[in-house]
Amino acid sequence: DAGVIQSPRHEVTEMGQEVTLRCKPISGHDYLFWYRQTMMRGLELLIYFNNNVPIDDSGMPEDRFSAKMPNASFSTLKIQPSEPRDSAVYFCASSFRGQTFSGANVLTFGAGSRLTVL
Amino acid sequence: DQQVKQNSPSLSVQEGRISILNCDYTNSMFDYFLWYKKYPAEGPTFLISISSIKDKNEDGRFTVFLNKSAKHLSLHIVPSQPGDSAVYFCAARGGGSQGNLIFGKGTKLSVKP
Image 1 (cartoon, rainbow over the protein chains, first blue to last red):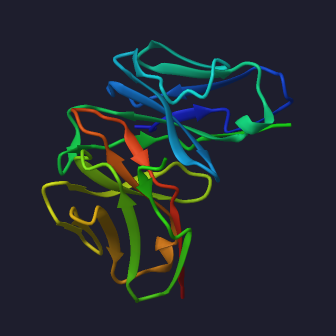
Image 2: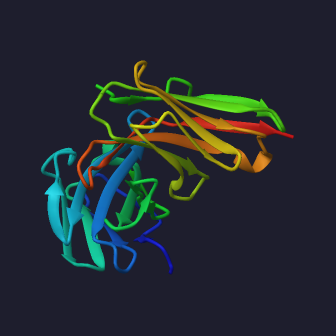
């Protein structure tokens, strides 16, 4: 299995531009998560989906952020318009409800997309 | 307000010695705790977990201890190896069949040869 695949790995853009980050979860996984990592806030959950349906988007910072999961093998996180404070590493993760380690469902993370907004 | 806190941003240990990484939490409803390890330019990878009904879980060189009364957990690595140098994240699960994970800010461990 290729794991969780994210693209692009690096994105540099100018303030005001639209940014789209992409994620392909592990085949068969029914949960998908978007996290953001910054120095100040660490790893914070933005949104997660179950069977392609958004379950909790309370972590999405503001209306400039949106996420979609049109099918089980693809998700996007869009920022429009982007701002310098959006600069961070964005991680996608997926999990399968039936797979546990000591009872805890374990998330498998992608390598991340590093976003720099100038 | 942070529900999961890792108060030490960094830790340096000599190879062969014990590494102890600490984590505090505030929410008594958390039912599972996990540790993830992260190398540069990679995503976090699962290391070990513990249920809130247990106080210890061991996997090879890695042991996690949970003190519920103190709302504190720790990860022990014995013996530490240079390949253990990474950022370690403590995470807590909010309950339910698939709650999201709440992460601490991480502790950067450096194991010196």
